[in-house]
Length: 322
Ligand code: 3EB
Image (cartoon, rainbow, N blue to C red; front, side):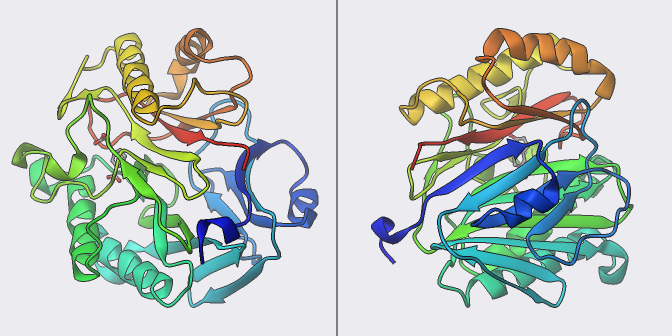
């Protein structure tokens, strides 16, 4: 498939009734947020992310201008249309014997399935794991997750990493959720000039560096932005200083937009802001009001950042109108 054959793809936060959203033509995915162990809806387009919204809780609506196919493949759910694909998997660590093996299983399942599809290019991945900072040093669960993920990506010879986020949830213990946006044409990864590429982090941060790109230029020219925090070079800055971490995070986001030659975030740039401490919401919202146009859609979620000293992380999209 060539880029010109891809349908329009957009992501929005929507307050509407979920049934109405599912009824809209071209609904590729409908994501809602809540750490209570609500049973997933059987519709493969529906995904419950196990993070509580700190303020309002809209739905995240992925849409393409094309008819949708969907299905279940064991525990894996997928929907596809117009050259785009949503694929998601919830894994129970207890069945696999820990986070590292669960990450391997999740990535092996996803890579195996995606490799059979026309939409075989991973563009953007989300990883939500329980108790991400539990364990000390190289036993920390995030580091074990990185080992399992990297193992499978190496096996599948995926060395051009997609954009990603990895956040700790406080939902069901042992739940590892991984989901992705894929497409029939590849994107172009983009790194942040203020940051060392994550896959080149030195040994201090774990035995296997994290496998992700700072951002991915989608084939429709939108930018998928990875989880971005107060990391400069490879080092965390402003330990436990919320206001300074937010400033540094926006310096990183600005540098990324500059590198992508994109203007400031606007109404088409839905952002997620992950807060380690939900009670920081008022301070964070005030800071967001200083940095962002009021039209920028933002969703504050309670979640843990993969380094203990970090209090806030932001990911999101800068979308063209295509
Ligand atoms: C960082 O910059 C913060 O392991 O997939 C951000 C985005 C982070 C993605 C991942 C981790 C991941 O290193 C953490």
